[in-house]
Length: 418
Ligand code: ZN
Ligand code: ZN
Image (cartoon, rainbow, N blue to C red; front, side, top):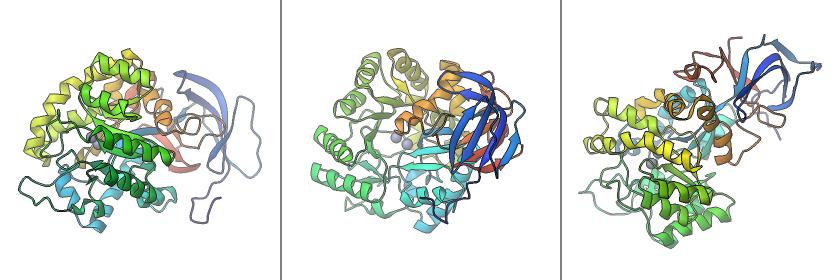
């Protein structure tokens, strides 16, 4: 039931829209859309007459569903994740607010947070307390000692890590099957909508080469079982074919990055029905701006190993029939490149498929098919009004939302220049 803290959801009719059908990758002209109580109630070529409504003549302008980014870190206000983790909690929270607002104004009305954001941020944007996208938070990503979520330096004491209490930390260190079970239960209890694990080495962390495997198979299976018990799933950071196949074999549902995937691993993922969430744009941003923006030197050196492989990974996965969803994984000042992943995808897969990755495929990742990523009755009223046809010109969706004439989230306009 709506509460008094939720944004007002008046009835709105958008007359004469050209609707972008994300599944078909086609435009449908002459559509009228009725929006009420935050949902799309009706999409019809027949005129919609409704009392007590705001009616807007769209004159054939393109309307598409809000974009979905399946891999973000809302609290990553710094490129140095170790420093980010040591920010005082209130400051870390405040620094995430402009990041959230930026995402929304770029047209991303839903995001899946891959480590850092929690129930509080999700609730703050849901209720309109804070401007930002709908957030599906993973809470703290789980990492083994020395893994991709362990930002302690080599000379730090290996005493219990305070990471789980730090707002600015994207992850927490946990080792052993029982400890994993407890950590998953805690993150679920705190409001995580899915569980994130670090199943291989990575770039942004100090002491874990990319080829390292994260967690034992027993630990991964324990995380998958506990997530499954709560009706949800595990997303795993994994780069190499070995790390990818091992995670999928243990029941992981979505592979994050996957930049070094080969045909064998791609076939394995496709057969298992696992999703791939590549994050190509972050490597480009880090290679270009990382050093000058304070990305640690040890991490800058790791970027090149995956940057060139990442574009290839996308093509390999799509050829094998893996469902590929949109991810950006940007940190600190590079968040402004969030929509640039669309440009990279469109060059490899075409505009329609790039848009699909950020709408219908992303909605499947979120287990929100029919509710997000589409304009149809019953879907949440997250809409973008675009100044042109993005199936022909993907640039209309790039940058900071300059070509979005209006953005609606949950049936309320957050931008309206109509
Ligand atoms: Zn990662
Ligand atoms: Zn990430």
